[in-house]
Length: 371
Image (cartoon, rainbow, N blue to C red; front, top):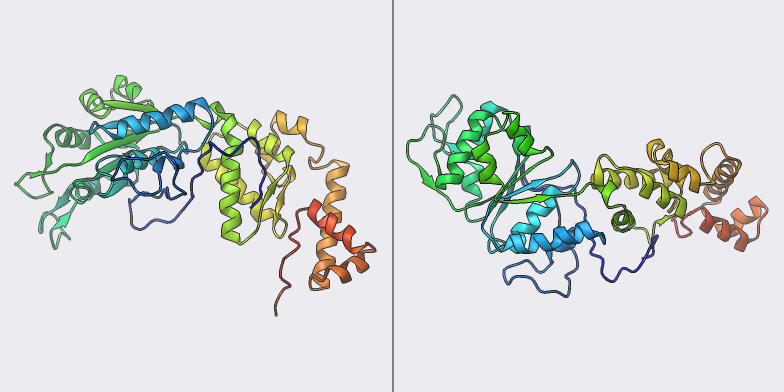
């Protein structure tokens, strides 16, 4: 399957992307991918979790090395990074490479649950603890026993819940809401935040003692704008995934479009890049080629993209190609995608039509519309 390529793929790891989730608060990331030659721990899954950490940059290679070392420890980990940098992906990789890798990995977004519900959500409750508590219920800590519990957006936790989390980390025990009996657990905690948690401590919004309990090992994920050399690798992976999902042989990315992607700052990081490419592919269909004018205005307007592109909207080349592509699609549709008939209608040779279809990224093997 061919897509835009830049450099060798021999030493590059590619992730699989998935937006599905099996249950509320369980990780959304899918790390399944072809196994690498380098063996992992005996209890790791056949697909090496490190293949989810995509890139050739020095920063991402350093993160991969740290993840392998951290995974062998039982220490609590704090992951800091901007939104969309892949904090949950790193947390899952740590889990799957650890001795707990065959056990459950649960994730909870601390900012998504109201204070009135979060205690029951995390610690569970006993029957009659409050109105509506008609039966005993396990909390997420108990459900993650022997595994790993990922606390995302930990900075959003209220002061009262910070105190309760501190006790869990110190004593390795908790009480269900309404219960008097403490319960022991063995669970590894990995926390994450898109803020500078030490600054939150200094501002008095986060407990200092809890911060030190959480940050035994601290990982800082770099934003995509600081590792631009990884953009082509990520783009290729996402286009491969999209091609498979749509049943296409390939999705091509033109060089001026790639220049725009590399030049953009990506405030939403890897997640924004993936969404940008999915949008561009949706707009390109039934073509399978992405040029710069299919990218969003914010990405197209970068200085690099303007300098590198002769196909920017409003230029003569852009308008000419847009009209020509539209006429070709109309002719193909009217002839039920019979290339010989369409070429006659357009006044072209059949080979001439096929050449233009390749140029505009129109899939030559598209099936004719059915009634």
